[in-house]
Length: 66
Image (cartoon, rainbow, N blue to C red; front, top):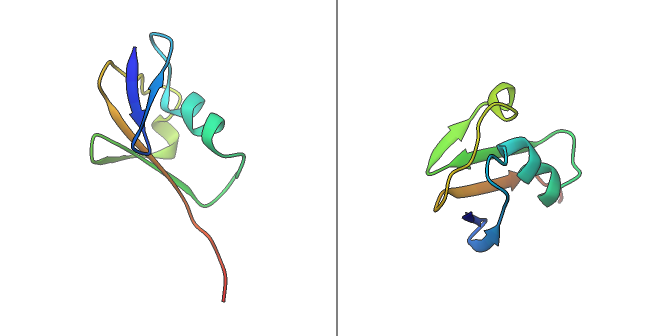
């Protein structure tokens, strides 16, 4: 299936979860948020939230600096 991840098209296996895609984008354990089709997905739901063809997933990572 085709999914947009951070604005880039990706080919993913059927049933791929938000958690799997987040892990492929960043190794950060904290400071990460995910939005599926414009709606924030709670971290507790990442494993159980399956992606579908043409979904849009945004993975955001907090960055500190000064």
